[in-house]
Amino acid sequence: MSERKQPYVISEEPGDKYYCACGKSETQPYCDGAHERLNTGKTPTHVVIEKKKSVAWCGCRKSENMPFCDGTHTRL
Ligand code: FES
Image 1 (cartoon, rainbow, N blue to C red):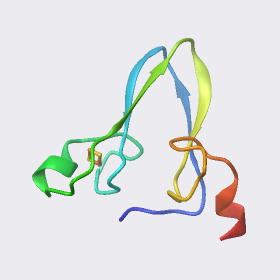
Image 2 (cartoon, rainbow, N blue to C red):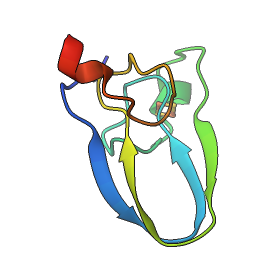
Image 3 (cartoon, rainbow, N blue to C red):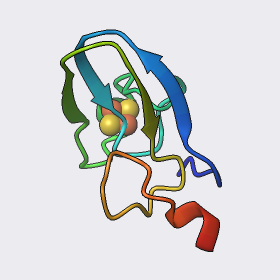
Image 4 (cartoon, protein in one colour):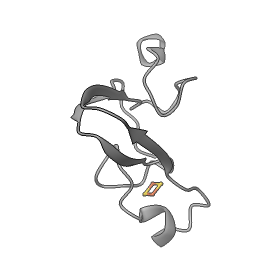
């Protein structure tokens, strides 16, 4: 599973985003369909970004506010 000790901080444009929930995507933090190819049993998390803003997507996969960073990575 793809894990790192920092979030993916991205300036997001409005629209639909699909956060990789399986950790196998090669285009983190977004789903690239790997969950189906690898039969992980997981599906991406759909998020609608309403307006342009900076988003801190969870990189450690331990956030209690998935798919967003809640600072948990600093305690790992
Ligand atoms: S590739 Fe990970 S959820 Fe789709």
